[in-house]
Image (cartoon, rainbow, N blue to C red; front, top):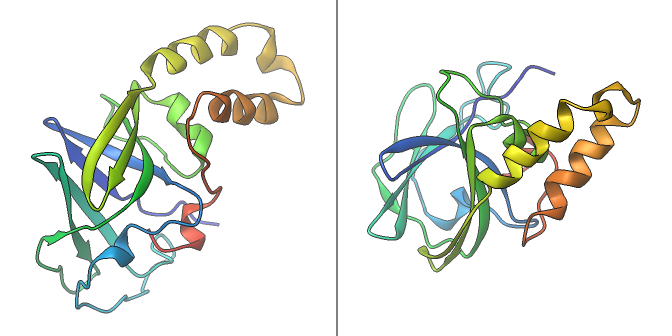
Length: 167
């Protein structure tokens, strides 16, 4: 399967990749963007991508398809999300554990679109890099170890594949 387009969250002057949302939650469905999805490429299975902006502790969003973009809408999202930042131009955020490959990450929690909790996961990333540089990378269970390490440091439960549900 082709790597899917990332959604982004602009927060504190940085562009973060939206890595994952809390299980059974949808961010894009919390606003009526009034534009249709438009599947025209294998890297955008959902038919759209979105940009989110946290401004004054509230989250807003813009939905894009290949032809149009919506107006900036207030997102009345209640739930958590993981966002990750890298200094590099590109960072993959296809799977939950991918946040460990970034320079920094945050777990955010919103109630009715207002940011009420933020947990810095950067120390978790640093710990993983130490483990990854040791014997763990030579085991056939490396992927499982990485997944377990990533999830044990989170406060909320997340889905696996972002391309299979509305973001």
